[in-house]
Image 1: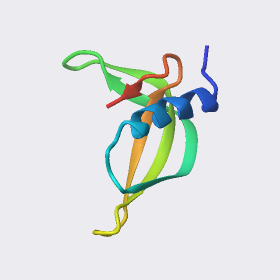
Image 2: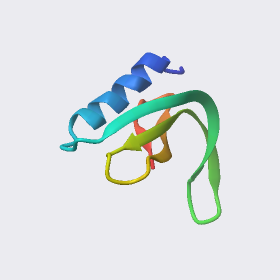
Image 3: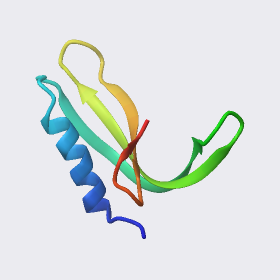
Image 4: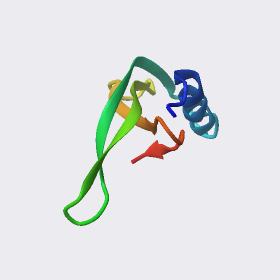
Amino acid sequence: GIISVQTAMNSIKEKYDLLLTSATYTITGIELVYLPVRRGRDAFELRPVWQFMMVEDNDKEEATGYFINIDATSGKEIR
């Protein structure tokens, strides 16, 4: 089944709690989407993922936006 958005957020929290940085990380959006994941040289599989839109602000550079994808069935990050 599909994990809850709270379970996916816990996966992200665990990752960012380990970072030794003064940067601030903000979740600016969350969507449940299908992401093509490579399963071989020419094969892809559509996986349901919780996609988090993130902004990193470290006070030294312009804020950076990026996505974190959490597999909606396993709770593991997809890179």
